[in-house]
Structure formats: C-alpha cells, structure tokens
Length: 299
Ligand SMILES: Cc1cc2nc3c(=O)[nH]c(=O)nc-3n(C[C@H](O)[C@H](O)[C@H](O)COP(=O)(O)O)c2cc1C
Image (tube, rainbow, N blue to C red; front, top):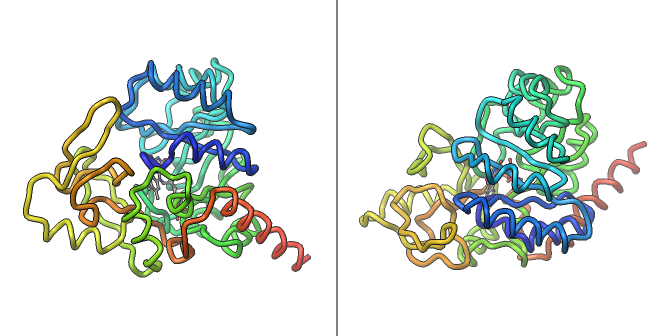
C-alpha cells in the first residue's frame, strides 16, 4: 500500500491478529533490511512485505525475506526463481493475482498461497473480473490457500468471501483511514466522505508506471485533469525529497505538500465503509468479530 502502509500500521495489524504488511518502494535494500528487522523484532505477530514486480529490487527481497513471515509479489508473471529465493530465506511466498491462469502460474512457481484480487479493489488492479466470480474460478483451479481481496470493507463482505470459500481476506482501503496509516490527512478525509460509486478504474495516474489500471476516487482524476502545473507537489520517496509529476503513481503521505486532491487517491469500492479514522486494531476487530458472528448465526 505504498506510503500508507507504515511499519507502525503493519505492527498494529499483526498485534490485532492479522498479517500486517509493509511495502517499501524506492527504499534502498540496506534501509529495507534495517526497517524490516526492527519491525519484525518489535511486532507481536507475523508481518509481511509486498513487492511490485515493475519496481523489483532483488537485494531488497533477500534482505526482507530473512525477517518477514511472508513475502508477496504483485503485477508481473509469477517467477519460480523469486519464490525460491524467498523460501531459501525461510519465509512463505505468495502472489496477488487477477485471474485463474495467473493463480495456476503462481502455484507452479511454488507459491504457498495466493491472493485473488477482484476489480473492486483500491490501487492497481491486475485483472478484469469481480471478486466473487474470480474467487470461484481460482478456488476451482488451485489447491493452495486463497485469500480474497477487493471491496472488502465490512464484516458482511468478509463473511461473504469466507462463505464463498476464501481462506482469509486482504483489506487495503479500510487501513488507509487508520490512526497508524501514513496517508495524508486530506486523503483520509476524502475517503471518509466517499462511497463506492465515487471510485473509478482509470489509467490517469500512470506516470512512472504505464499500462496499469488503478481504482481511485473520481474526484482525484477530475482535480488532476484540471491542474495546470507540471508537478502537483513534493514528497519523501525513499531517502530523497522528490517532486511529484502531475499524474504520477505515488499517493500522498503525511509529509507530502502541494495539491493533495489532484494526486492518486487510491480507493476500493470498500470506501463506503470508511466512516471515520479508527485504530487498525478496531478495524481488524470490527471485521473479524463481525464476520464470525454473521457466519455463526447462519449455521
Ligand atoms: C492505497 C493503496 C495502495 C496499494 N498499494 C499496493 C501495493 O503497493 N502492492 C500491492 O500488491 N497492492 C496494493 N494495493 C492493492 C491491495 O493489495 C488490495 O488488492 C486492495 O487494497 C484490496 O481492495 P480494498 O482496497 O477494497 O480493500 C493498494 C491498495 C490501496 C488502497
């Protein structure tokens, strides 16, 4: 989840019983090693790290795999060599996928589990199928555990995914609006006010990462198109302070300055469930305990 997924957020999710994950794009491998080692040492539960294939740094993967329980990859063809590196360091490997063929390829590459990402998801979207249909196809195609992702922001949605056969769920947007998130307050406020219909799949924020559709708040596309400058602001990216070109990929973090509404405000259809800023533990509890209650009431 880019800059929103701080080590503090991952630690809070894992302390609450989830698998907290970080992603550290553009961060040098030496720094990844230090950040992830400190995270794993301080966390009271398992933590993971996500790598985007178009920005992959092999040294960072190896550094992270030594400390994380899970190393996940997204947005590229599954590669046995990568999975092997992760396993050699003692971590589990998984791939977030957008189709049954990609799930099969991930399993063939040796992945321990897969995340089925439906088009309801916030952020970059790998496939073209909605979650329930995709989950059905992937559950029929592979034997490894399958997590469901995309539009899951309520206990009802989580219960539905589990009832449909998912072994767990992946939640993104709800955690952007938590006290521990690194997202800019104005981005979080925009999430609080939005509903599912206010999101759109677009390629508007393709600077640095072309040909990769993503779901954002429609208001961000409108504001970006109306913005007349070449750079919308500045942010810390890895060790450096960088200008953000208009239409670029990064979403605004707490340290970002400039035209926040015109930046990539990623949001899934689950955004309608973001009613206020909560602690990550409250979100985990609300979803997990609520889903359990719903599922038990039906047996
Ligand atoms: C702000 C944001 C950033 C994201 N960044 C990543 C990422 O770096 N890597 C990744 O695999 N998925 C990323 N995703 C997608 C999530 O892994 C997941 O598919 C999605 O959040 C699920 O849908 P939801 O947002 O409705 O919960 C991101 C999602 C959001 C909302």
